[in-house]
Amino acid sequence: MQPAPESPRVVVLGEAVAEVLPDAADLVVTVQVHDRRRERALERLTGRQLELTALLEAHRAALGTVSTDAVAAFPEAGEGGRINGSVATTTTRARIADVGAAGELAVAVAALSDVSVHGPHWRVSREHPVHQQVRTAAVQDAIGRARAYATALGGRLTGLVEVRDVGGRGGRMAMAAFAVPGGAPALELQPAPQEVTGQVEVTFTMSVPDPEVFAR
Image (tube, one colour):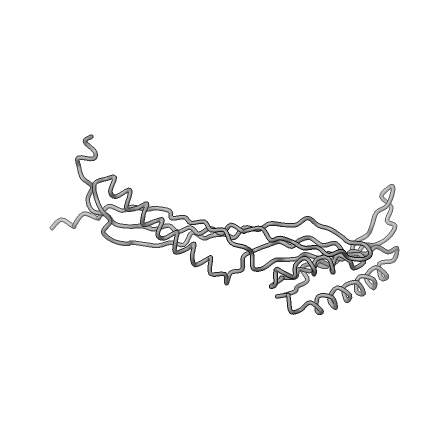
């Protein structure tokens, strides 16, 4: 007995895009000090980092996680390449859960001595319902595309073989680095809408195409 012929398959990529306001942001803070003596540079760095930690703790209600990404200490070369001191630096990343407080926090941190700030980097959190919305819309897009292909071949969809998550992404917008000497002015930031995409690869079976399609 001859095995039954395998049903034709249609493989499509479904896509969906949505724009939403960000519900989270990242603030990257770099503390950098210079001193002729390495030990003194590290002592000053410790003091500045404690000031930063205290400030962030005072804004704990608006923050998510806070982590130190990097610590570095290295010689500082002057004219002619001669070593004339040491540089000590730390980089701290603060996740902001309350985007409405991003401007106030960024300015407060930038007002600290020996500190530079980069951000806020707006983002859409993983928990935001838009991610599920674009995934669902991507599947619907895949069904529509596959149905159109099957119809163009004189057939119809008959079943589902596989659904593969290709992934998605949430857009980000960065604010330039800045430092604020002296008194910190008020700064109101307007978060830009973020683009969130969803993609899914879906394989369907379809009925045997109409032979007349290929005879045209």
